[in-house]
Length: 451
Image 1: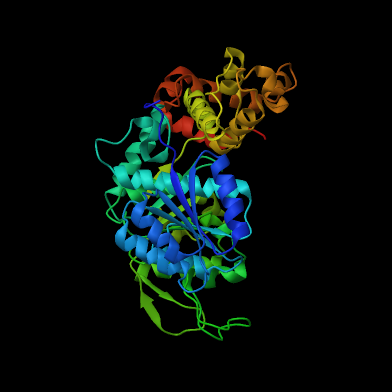
Image 2 (image 1 turned 30 degrees about the horizontal axis):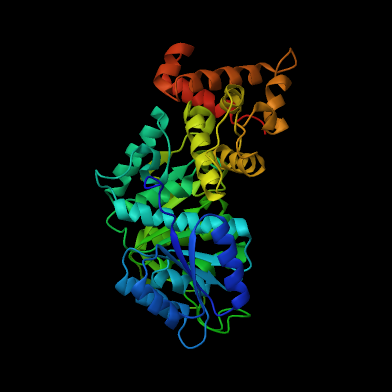
């Protein structure tokens, strides 16, 4: 009994009894130890007597607001993580929360899955902050919040360490689902700015007409509907790090404004003629080939070079060899624990199918598949091949016969050689009889496998 890890302790603060009940029930069902409080004052009293790993608090509450509670926690409880629940679709509350010290926020309305994902991220950030870059950190299974033993991932880990030791701009490239935000968080929390805000922004998820205002803020009357002045994400990230995901989705006009911020270290709120200096480290990510975007004229060459001071390429899951099975077992154990089930195990045939599948959605797809298997599976029965999605079971059959193009056959062979050597491009080049540069060009030409 003593060897079982203690469940994370979460305090939920909200003046709505219905919201408290729903959050308490969902978090408890996921295996967490949950405390509740109807307001900030009561929460402060509870925190004086009880150790809590994470506080999930509403932003707007009577008498003492959620921001006041965040300030109290940041001033008195350094090891307690904070997640703010903000009113949808306001960004201002999120900016204030991050600026004050809540490093994770969730916009209403949200699904149960979004809630649990945000809680896991917050607790993982707490773990990373506790261990930092110390030698006493857990083994590679939890390094930087990432998992991988392949040579390809060891190169990523080494690049993270180097990037964390500087304040240079970093461009993180990789297919969707490979973990680009995890890499960005690892860089931030391993750097000298780890105690300052980390502000993630999905540039592709914000309408073009609103992106400038969300990034740089706006003054009252700047446009129709701007009834008050409002800070932007760069204000929230001052002295910390901003992560610009899907940076390739910015328009050319917006790219010019970002370039100016990189060059001058200044921002100008929409509707204002005054600039303000900011001290913000920029990490950017893309799932597109930016040099190709530059060649097409849809991404500025000068901005590309400004962002690409340090480049980190995250390998797709299909090139990570046995990491696939390592990750599958990790997710199976985690989800089984959350559901109060015995640790899930896999049959040899199921493992072989997982290993051979191309994983077009990468780690995110693998995580979702394993979660579904654990949720739907029997408590004591191993996961068999027949339990896997039909797409995975029959993908190999669809690729047999003499119906494939030469490019498809070549793609499969190159990918399989890479997978057989754990993503080691040098060894794969030797087996294929080509040099490493030619292999890189061939991988670019062949592209990812069809979904």
